[in-house]
Image 1 (spheres, rainbow over the protein chains, first blue to last red):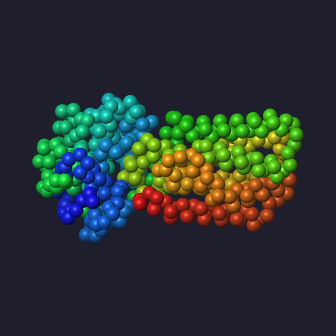
Image 2 (cartoon, chains in turn yellow, cyan; image 1 turned 180 degrees about the vertical axis):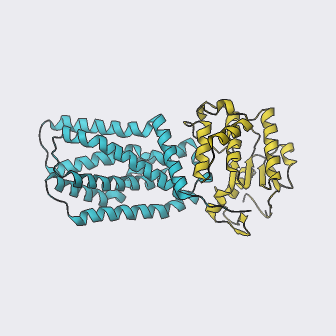
Image 3 (cartoon, one colour; image 1 turned 90 degrees about the vertical axis):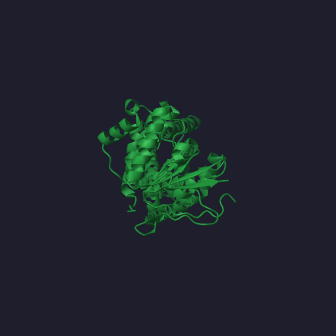
Amino acid sequence: MLFERLNLLVNSGQCLAVTGANGSGKSTLLKMIAGLVHPTTGTIHVLGDGRQLDIEERIACIGLVSPEIVFYADMTGVENILFLTRVRGLTCSLEQVEEFCQIVGLVVYKDNLVHTYSTGMRQRLKFAVMLALQPLLWLLDEPSSNLDADGKILVAKMIDNALTERKTVIIATNEPWEVEYADYKIELA
Amino acid sequence: MPTTRLNLLNGLWAVLVKDSLCEFRTCYALSALFMFALISLTSISMSIGVVSLPAQLTAALLWIILFFCAMSGLSRVFVQEQESGSIVVLRIYASGQAVIFGKLLFNVIMLFGLTFFVIPLFTMFLNVDIYRWPMFIMILFLGDIGIAATATITAALVAKTQGKSALFTVLTFPILLPQFLSSIGATTKILADSQPDMSEIMFMAAYNVAIIIASSILFDYIWYD
């Protein structure tokens, strides 16, 4: 049994921090919320317009930053962002994508193939995708991992902006400064 | 929180363009398909020399070449995503139906391209005369769609398993067998300069529709569960 008696409601504009030792199930909890893993018992409801969303509606409102997100290595950063926005049914101009790359500090490398990116650059690209998709529910699994000091400032700014825009943010982390954003905290044993 | 739904056509088109772009840059599946076709055609041609084969054997050889070419390359649409880890991105951001139909369309286009490459070589190397081209093209069209549709759903099924390649062929062949036999039967008649029965053509078309609908229903279980 990974989770027991875990019962919580997180509203728009609120932040939940999930902490715990390695292997305690932080990432698994985020994957369950995203619909990538199904709980053996219990339920996770993602609500919108006052009702429970079905799987396709849930997908359409979720954005995930996680080590498990792997981009297409044979496509450029810009192509990856454009693909993910189009597959979501959103429209995003090239200028907008360039602006997102500028914000996350990837503008110089935006037209390079992703297989040439460092792990830190790939992490920044995940945040550029979040900017392009503007999901209502942000699931951040170790969001500042592999990032330098500038990158950590970027993450802090993005979490701040998301909460200001009434997005729901769930962070799986053990970084004290990321936990400070949380309205609620869960520590998994 | 306001809700939105994923748009099937936009998603399908995005998946198709993405797969084409990645394939164009790497040529993994393309080279596997075309090299297999070239090698098998050359081997058959060299082994039979200038002898003309009976129509039934010629038709069977054509569909065996197309089938095994498909088996060598079409599974990559899902296997590649699984092996590289990018399947998580698709599962998070794309609708299941857009993924299956986008990848199906990509496989259909690949197989049409392969057929377009194989047929001239086949007629040349095996000294085959085809008198009823429109009907022949229709049979190829229906047969290719059947192979691509079956290969796409079985590729999705085997993507997470060990021993993908063996399992892919073993699973695809029995599902495709009725369509495969009809294709060989109809092609045999065309090569013998007679008209295939309308019932054969109707069966092939109906089989494709059934496989595509079944794939669409089954895929949501594979994708979300």
